[in-house]
Amino acid sequence: MSEPLTVAVAAELTETEASGVLKLVADAEAVDHMRALNEAALLQLRRPHPTTQHMLVSEHQDLVGYAQLESGTNWSAGQLLVSPDHRRRGIGTLLLQRLLRESSNPLRVWALGDAPAARALAAATGMTRQRELLIMERGLDDDLPEPVVPAGIEIRTFVPGKDEQQWLRVNAAAFAHHPEQALIDSDDLADRMTEPWFDPKGFFVAMINETMVGFHWTKQHQDQLGEVYVLGIAPSAAGRGLGKALLVTGLRSLQQRGSTRVELYVEADHRAAIELYLTYGFTTVNRDVMYAQTEFFRSA
Image 1 (spheres, rainbow, N blue to C red):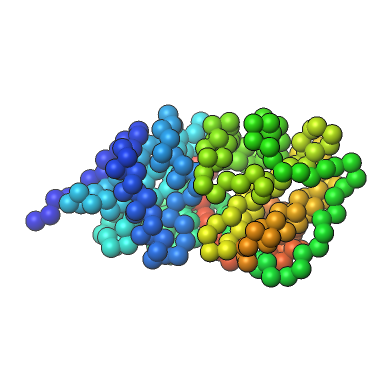
Image 2 (image 1 turned 30 degrees about the horizontal axis):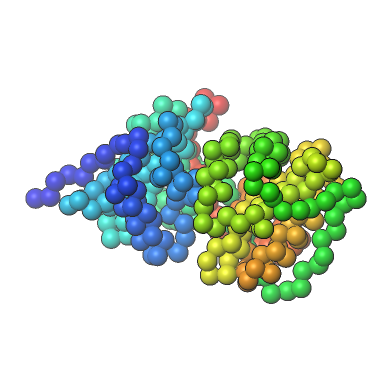
């Protein structure tokens, strides 16, 4: 008779445990054809953080399930995944119950791709849809127009060692109401700049004299896929067409670097941004959904 599955909780992963999670992620993505964990969660596998907890379910020394909990001031966010070979055995329920137990604040859980199994698990534990992130794509096989840069603004590439603090300032202002992007600090930026994909030649900043007022950070994936990684405009420069100029600048760069298609992620309620992307040929191909405890709504 097999032993009951249990969840081990750790503040920091060993190198072996982190490698096991990465293998689990790869196995899940190969079957599901979508991300198993988002970028922030993957970065936290390597860098210990005081607000992050890792939860692992193993069977016969093989990792079969993983969850990550990020505790915030007013709410906590979780993600989880289960080995494709061990699904429909209650491991997802076990991990979600442990996330609920470990969270000291109302819990929100990302369902990347919003698969039917994720919706069913959320419903079974009384969680409801709280937020949606659209995944939009377009091809890059057309002739893109030259960017129309507003008068008095120069668009150049990011200079490591010079532009970090200005970028953090503009990012915080542009995403002041965004629950994750606004919280990016110098350590988070440094983590991303050490990733293999980072290329300052694909990181564009808009300047008025020596003051940064906007940016478009692109990302080159494998398989000729590019990404509008993050595009932000300082409130002082909004309404001048700078977003269009930066978007086209980044798309042309991705095209020149060999991308044949490009993706982006945008909040489903950010109508202005969605209209911009629709204008430039993007269409919604999938969505991530955040589910929240109903207690969160009663206490908010």
